Amino acid sequence: MSKVSIIGAGFVGSTIAHWALISGGCQVVLVDVVEGLARGKVLDLMQSGPIAGHSVDAIGTSDMAETANSDIVVVTAGVARKPGMSREDLVQVNAGIVGGVVEQIVKLSPNAILLMMTNPLDTMTYLALKKSGFPRARVIGQAGVLDSGRMRAFIALETGISPENIHTTVLGGHGDEMVPLVRYSNIAGVPLAYFLTDEQIAQIVARTRDAGAEIVRYLKTGSAYYAPGAAACRMAQAIIKNTHEIYPAAVYLQGEYGLRDICFGVPVILGKNGVERIIELDLNEAERAALMRSADSIRSTMAHLRY
Ligand code: APR
Image (cartoon, rainbow, N blue to C red; front, side):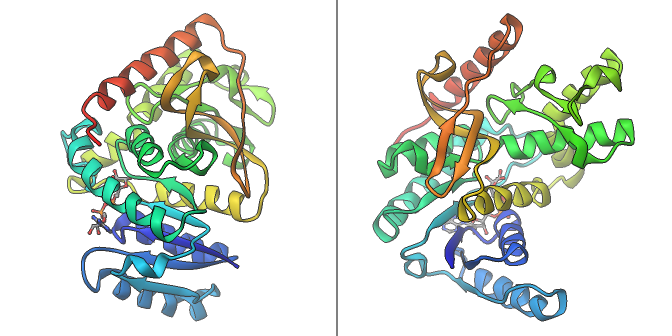
């Protein structure tokens, strides 16, 4: 039985705990600095187990010590984006929170795989890598599973075809400069252009880039959590079950895609060791230029990072 700890029992953290209990195969520890918050949420989640038919193997606590010897630690601790606030605006405040949390994780679970959720995602993943000193295979940011899932949903809505048949690849940073790769997206192996006009595809790409902000505009206070929670759980399950599924994820690059010393969304194979392999896609000039713009945007956010 794997031990999965989730730091931060807010909207994203508690949604991940819910998905993790439904998916099974792990003990869940949910932690929050706010006294009683994680405990209350876990009691509620546990009590849904007998009714919905899922595991009740969970602990809610404000004590990080309970996370000791975790196999996976999911970090959601931080402040969520407010309307009008870019992910970049978040960097200062969340760097302080994430840095402190990672220091504790290193002491308590030196062999854990870190799954980062806190925004600005690519920068927080970089911070976690540097603070932890963990090998890059064990520090992974969740962004591409969410962004490609959003693109799949929009294609499904537009075509009326099951999202199960829709495959999309969204690389780069988890921001406005993310790179949905139309050429590496398809419906049951058939290129998108068979089902959609150029204009429809362009609209889907634009909506995918704006999807997080679109939700923030409606919610007004807070940001998305159902799909981010599902995405984190997908990745955690791939690691726990050693499935070797390919997902886009933010990982530390050392020359891949011509990039160095940056955490950036690229396709990876996930397994019990975390990132088992980084896959380098063959990109055309326009795609490569879009990826470089995305990397520049991340670097400008990283410039605000103090650690
Ligand atoms: N240790 C543990 N929990 C913490 C700490 C800490 N040091 N600092 C803050 N928290 C907790 C807060 O008390 C809060 O309950 O993190 C939780 C964050 O939850 P929400 O404010 O509900 O934010 P949420 O919507 O869950 O988003 C969390 O994920 O997707 C990203 O942009 C999002 O960065 C944000 C993060």
